[in-house]
Image 1 (cartoon, rainbow, N blue to C red):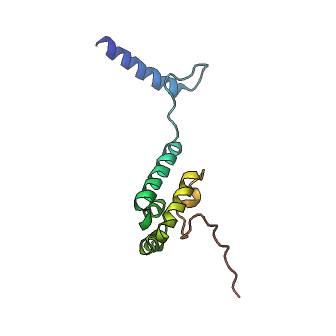
Image 2: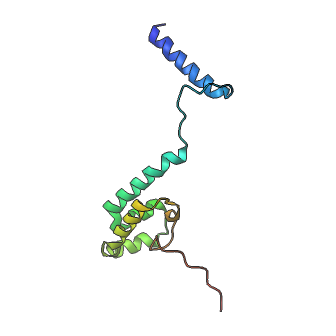
Length: 121
């Protein structure tokens, strides 16, 4: 075996054994992998923003974030509220810290607060 192959093998063994042992005063030689949630957040925002700019008048960003079928149909018939709704949506997608309220949102105006359930007369 060559010197480079031995060094690579030693690095792999050290990384796996240091991460697996979990005991002792030593820190692992290999950096920890970030959680899957933190890797997913920003690309989701980026894709939703690109869709809002490119196909926002047809509600593509709303389909990506998950909504009822009537919302993109309404966007398509009115060309995104004459181009105003995709711009407002884009502003909210860019400047809102958490996208959770917009995922699966069933309202036409995704930034509006949901109405409280009404009581029967």
